Amino acid sequence: MTNPDIKKGLAGVVVDYTAVSKVNAETNSLLYRGYPVQELAAKCSFEEVAYLLWNGELPTQDQLAGLTARERAGRALDPALKAIIDALPTDAHPMDVCRTAASVLGARHPLAENASPEANMSKAIDLWAAMPAVVAYDQRRRHGQELVEPRDDLGYSANFLWMTFGEDPVDEVIEAFNVSMILYAEHSFNASTFTARVVTSTLSDLHSAVTAAIGALKGPLHGGANEAVMHTFDEIGIRPEESLEQAATRAKAWMEDALAQKKKIMGFGHRVYKNGDSRVPTMKAALDKMIAHYGRPELLGLYNGLEQAMEEAKAIKPNLDYPAGPTYHLMGFDTPTFTPIFVASRITGWTAHIMEQAAANSLIRPLSEYNGPDQRSL
Image 1 (cartoon, one colour):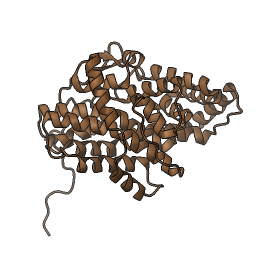
Image 2 (cartoon, helix red, strand yellow; image 1 turned 90 degrees about the horizontal axis):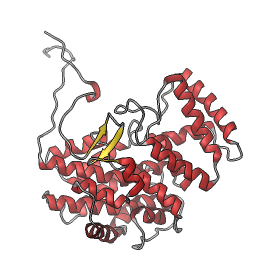
Image 3 (cartoon, one colour; image 1 turned 90 degrees about the vertical axis):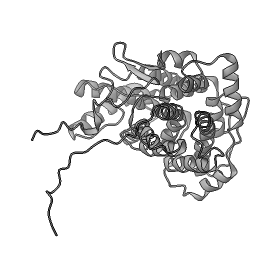
Image 4 (spheres, rainbow, N blue to C red; image 1 turned 180 degrees about the vertical axis):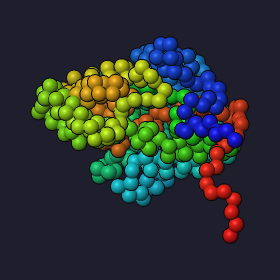
């Protein structure tokens, strides 16, 4: 009997086709429906990218106007959902709040049990529109602050910032936040997307698939890595009075010690990218602008010191979570809120995959190789 070829973690296993996104190995670019994500981040709004992921093409002006109007009409926090969020403890992880919110929104949706393509598109847009209010209010309630009502004169990213902080966001911050939302929107068959497709393959509903995906994204080996990056910065110590050079020296020494102790350092390496995460240069440019905007060079020092030490010791490059974490920190988001921001963005990619899976469905049900005791009797 030959030993089976076990693919732990499904590494290297191609399980299906997708037209939603691809990592182009030749150019080391992440493509959304064929477009390099760095070009989309430079030239498009998040609303345009959402339309692209759902429909396969960038919108015309009329199509964009239609999507924008629909999204803005769905921004307010449902009072019933607000009451449920208020009933959750403030020490619950914000991802637990997101997971609960997605389930509640599904149970209350008028098309909850309708799985037609039109109904799924409607549910995807409604969920995407509703999530910023959930994330923003959850951060505010933890600080004893009241709900901020949405504004229909702001784009998706600007309104997200407005509902979180209750202040008119400046253009530089909106731009950096918009870039992050586009970069986080989609990434092929990652763990949470595959989770969503598995649930969809059983003919379960869209909200159930997204709720499961949120659970997968919570883990520090996936979406939670951006939180872990800031925990690393906090452990080293963020000292605003420090120069860039001083912070870099301390960070490098910390990394060398951590690697000597064989600690797992989050924010570095990626299973798909062999020459570095293609999204990092775009996100790092946004981080640089935020560091300059807020006058916080010591954060760049920590960033550079850790990156240099990891490169010298392991030749491992950062992934998207590494520059995204400190960017959100500078904007004023609490560290546990970082992954919920990821949720609001990735809803677009998840639901694009859910609809693609539903359109050509086959139950995802892999086999396993048993390695327990042989058959025995009582």
